[in-house]
Image (cartoon, rainbow, N blue to C red; front, side):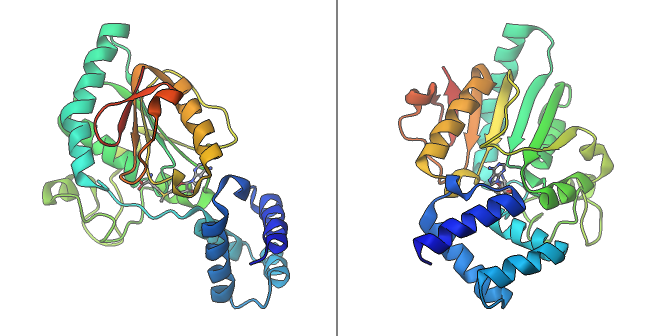
Length: 264
Ligand SMILES: C[S@@+](CC[C@H](N)C(=O)[O-])C[C@H]1O[C@@H](n2cnc3c(N)ncnc32)[C@H](O)[C@@H]1O
């Protein structure tokens, strides 16, 4: 795809879908767009955008494709185990020291279909049942959020890391799988663009995993600075397995084990 077509496309996507591809890496995004056009069977982008003005389902499919919302419960189980064994106990202890009896403030940023905040809610229920907390979960993809709010449906693959006891306790017994109401009521879902919108502050934990993979380094710089400002001192940012932050101190973080960064 040549630069001019890509620039026109970015303009049309921003206008139609309110997604700014200027923050995403060009080469990967161009490849994704090329293969989408082939799959859509439209002859060119002009025809495709004409189709989008009349077909809201296609518009939603395109949005899902651009924002890539692959996810599953307990994605990278080992990292969740570290969150359980080390990070959450540390956060509970230090937050109690600092603010006496305030609920932990937790955020799943880029929560996609909701498996990530539901994983955290399961972990809290099982490992820290007496700990009070608030959990907000945000994404820019409206379709993904709708599914997240509804607690599913999830596929067999998406729930494969739940053990039999967890499935029995938190997931409906038969496909299509949904999470039980008791888990849903703990989470506040909201639409939010991490690159454009303002953040709340005072978070103990921000989980932002497998979201920044396609962001430019400028977009990542801005995001990590905003995350740092949104955390309380000593708060933790939990990132994806491939998203190592190089030179975390320039954003006000120190390493706190693989995939975890502590606000200085
Ligand atoms: C691959 S999913 C990751 C879901 C989950 N965090 C996980 O690790 O399983 C990436 C999510 O990031 C969201 N996303 C991408 N750009 C975003 C932005 N600028 N603001 C908010 N969410 C964004 C997408 O909509 C998608 O749901």
